[in-house]
Length: 444
Image (cartoon, rainbow, N blue to C red):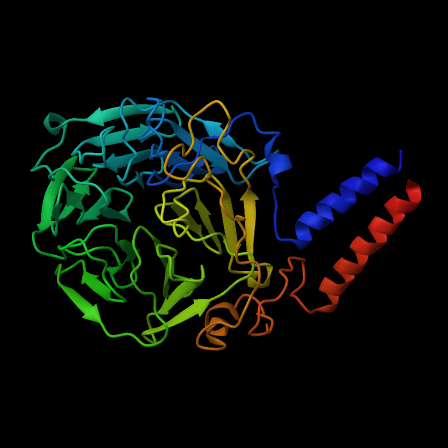
């Protein structure tokens, strides 16, 4: 009888030490799991006091058998509340509304999605409204919305300006890269043109800074469908003028389909992922100093782009996406990870590891281009922590909340205890694991 609680204690501690909250074995307790997908739309929304990461549509790559490809299936992953954290199937949308479109919540109860690709991966100009409480979909037609209507597009970006306004910029329609901006006003139920020649860009990162009433824009592809370099633009939303900012430090280069957020507590812009040439670091741009900081936390998720993400500071979540950089193919995945800025020494924590490398087993998952493999390497590929660039820059952002411990410049084993790596608490955790293992052996 003593064996069972002992094993439970060892398992729990082992998961804590390796920085992983939920393992593949834990995921088996979940009733359903979406097959891997990329270029879905979504975000973090609260329903009846519970936080969920929502995922609308996306592309599963495989459509040779008629069951995969661009899908109209929708899911959410529970982040808070009691019980096992699982993916939950939602109502199917009438069409593939989430593929390379945008999702913006207004008034706290409805998510608005504009554009995106259809089942043939062609750009659309549809506007959909999803009701979080009712789990229902409705298409808003031009006859129901005043003003001119934006042209069809996908791979664009939107930002939420208020509970009733969202702003859209750029995107692509066929071979044409767009440079116009549009404002959607929920109170007036109207579209209006905000500018025609703002910036020719798609697959870009865009974050709203309410302190300055500007949008920060980075990365993406230009009018020749070539990736931008390390450019950072500041878009004044009062005058709708845009300027290129001169920055210092090891800034990101050639990002596309990446995460972008403004963190008011740090007065910084956060960028993550979107290229094969990075080390899955978190880029933080200090607006006051106009300088970059690249933070290399432990247990970094595998490189990817076209994922969904959400910021509920101090927590930053990422899920799904395309595991780029492996055989130059498309490898959709369905994992979930979290980074806590208030405890950076914990590194990234995996909230969900797919229970099946090829999806559920009954649904198509990455057949064809990658020979059925959507998890070619471990999901925690970059497990070690190393010094940030420039050295010590992470302290500028994180010291007000916690003490970032010193790490060596070489890769070190990942540690995730309630204490920083190298502290007495971490050694005690390791010692406790050894004692627990010894006790279980003796019980046997």
